[in-house]
Length: 333
Image 1 (cartoon, rainbow, N blue to C red):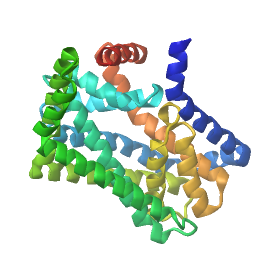
Image 2: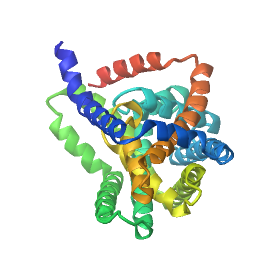
Image 3: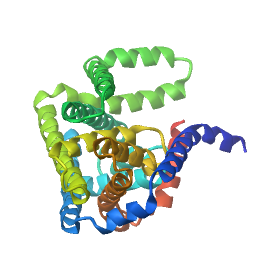
Image 4: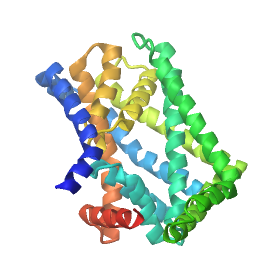
């Protein structure tokens, strides 16, 4: 019981947020109208949008492999990325991020500690791109006054985070010395932490390579452009009058919604953010929810297919990986 209560402090806030948002959506949305919107959607446009989901995943693998300095094969990275997103969709506590670092460490000569910072960098830059896209779309969006301040705040936090990571990468010996001084009384902790920090700082070394980081930013920008096109096509299938900037606004809002604590897969928060953004643009709550649910299908499609194939190739299951991750985290604690 005590273990359950301890874990509940971690998952309960996100679960409550998700459940409250789902209840609000069901209360305000006319479900028959939403189903009618789904039936009348342009399925040819939707098919094109869904196809781009696989292109997005292919480029996302290039993004991560660039940060990894091509130390793992593209095929290995490609399926590991899919597995990570699949884990995030169905497992709690954003275990997909730890999961892909854990899985790749078993399929390559890289250690978990040096893989993890590449995922941290990737996620921080993702937040920066989502904030930039949201802010860029705001001048063209009516009724979203004040949201630019949120984008600026998030952008500033992301910038501070990147600067801190750069400082750690540049002056890592200083950080190691501080850790050694603080952990001197616990030799076991010092040995484990020293090994982890060594690997972690090796992974952060990408920030000191300007050409490598520039290539990473190029592929990341291309990845987000594909996402903008995909979200625009999804919206266009339901709203023929949609403008390309709607894709930017919807994607930026959805990205922030996905970052809010929630049930696995950003249940409720994704629909609330994406559907809410479209409701601001159109005033049509029911059709906006239909678009948001289609966006969820888009996210599940690539991770389900690619991640599922990856797990089958490796003889893994979601429940099996979950148990392995729990044991791995327990050892780390």
